[in-house]
Length: 135
Image (cartoon, rainbow, N blue to C red; front, side, top):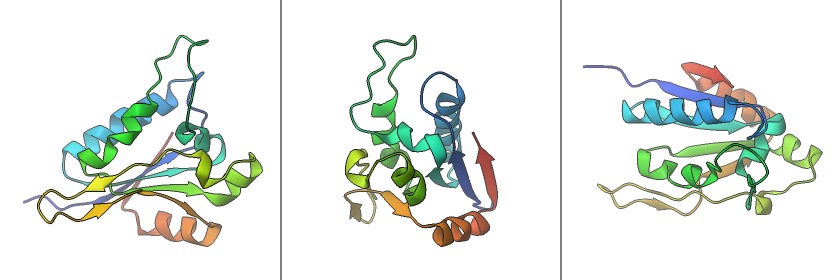
């Protein structure tokens, strides 16, 4: 029987212009498929990955923002955003998408798993993680 690990995926880069955000999303889906406890943290320009209304029409990249909205269906229960990174970029949590989560067995529901956290909570979450992937 395998042990469940806490995986934290740290997203630091803007969503488009590089492959980092897309690769992170792919690895998140793989981790969730293997029944690990998966969380995401968005810091620095990574906060732009969750901004509503992203337009990729002028780039060669597909808009993968809708995929984030489905992460709750894959068992991802926590998505954290660094509050200081939001503020430094003139954003608030109102600018971000909402991601719902529902446990089909217990019928527990959460309207939005995206949560802004301060620096102390950020450090705590990193320390609690068994594995941290940085993108």
